[in-house]
Image 1: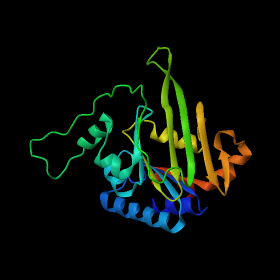
Image 2: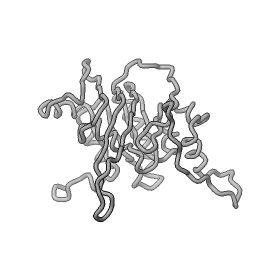
Image 3: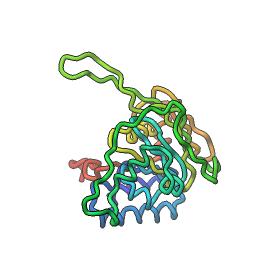
Length: 244
């Protein structure tokens, strides 16, 4: 994974997307990788979009957080506010599902149950820094897939990303948190244009100019991707075995 970090930083990117980079590592190496990312962020002044389901990791590295569930943003805001005073039932349930040293021996962890829809939209807390120095601005992002309904069944539309909005500031670590299948990785692939979004906007503010990512042509994607590097969850699967 250190080699993958080095490869990602060769281009001196303004934004590093780290998709569950510590999931496949033991806790000792995980701590080393997190410390390395923090040191590199300070040295190069880059922003990090950190995708994870691990709230312990988020507590150690993130400045701002977006919490996703079934493709939607449930809650967003500064690290301290969200983890100390969660407003949405889903984030409250996630925090209560984490074991602590003060639990009784017979105490059970909270069970995550399906969350009701929120017609009024996600709970958003305002960061004191506001929109200053925004490097990535995602608004109303949408992505659906066509799936087959089992053996011999018809087709159905599955909404993987549903009206997702957030902004990442220069030099900060911004975490997208949620359980498996909540749409975190899909959002990151839409930002990189590894997938095409169905709706919404993705604007990248790099090299002193604003880039409409969804409007880029194939020839314009290569220089854009030098400014945003991607680090995958599995370092072994990221390398071609015929070239190593």
